Image (cartoon, rainbow, N blue to C red):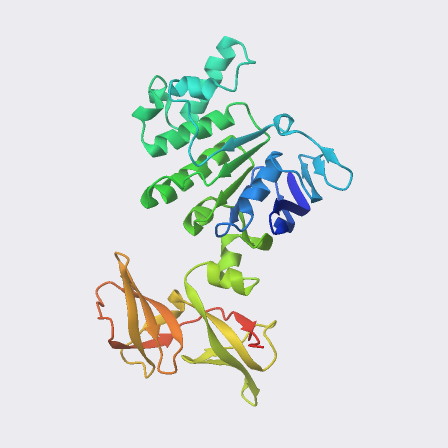
Length: 357
């Protein structure tokens, strides 16, 4: 593995005492892979990124990169940030307004002879598709172009690892996902190993080979996007990834075999690792619920959100349970209206029912 973090913890002192910002996190990235740390604000993802960069000291654990231990809390071994050969891209781009695009990219290349420096700048600008803008000032570029310049500047010194902290948060929503795909392609072309922090799922899915979902300082799950969506390892991951709810259900085992009964009816065979027969919670995503006027199961529309090609309906069942459904936009029902729905669950995901005690 190129990057390994093992049982890493970062702690901050507060008036109320010491709290763990990162609590026992382990992850690994192979050379050339792009990892993404995903989670809500305050979950510890930026603190973990800063620890990898050498900007925060570890309270526990160790980090190794390219076969070299760069920090070990137990022994006190610590490689300073400036010696780790790590590049960083920040959410505010941090470009120098008084320098041209080319001069910004060349900023970290002062150790090279002038001809090599000019050649390297040209290579980086061609990589990010901005060779034509070398002489422009940053303010003459769009937000997406400025982010590409920041990426070129970070890649120019050939870092061993690239860290990106919320790199698209200042851009509009449509541009974010498109630029995320572009950045992934650029990093792939350059063969760069990268670790990215974001709170946006679409960015994470567009960028990441491996995605880690963090919550309250802990890494809830580390895997690819398909696994996070279809095989969530915890209730938090199930509710944070995608759009869905955890609805009450029951695992039944009788002469007809094992099955899952839910407010929408039977959902099929439970997975092998399902809870024992009895009450449980089932994950019902918006794409697991289909609008069907012929269905005997009815639900009342509580909210609707127009998404262009579809509506996202928030529905209330007669028993009080809430579910979500994506419905084609030409089915424009009104809030308060009752519609028919049926389950279309391909993979049943169950969790033990939480005790109210």
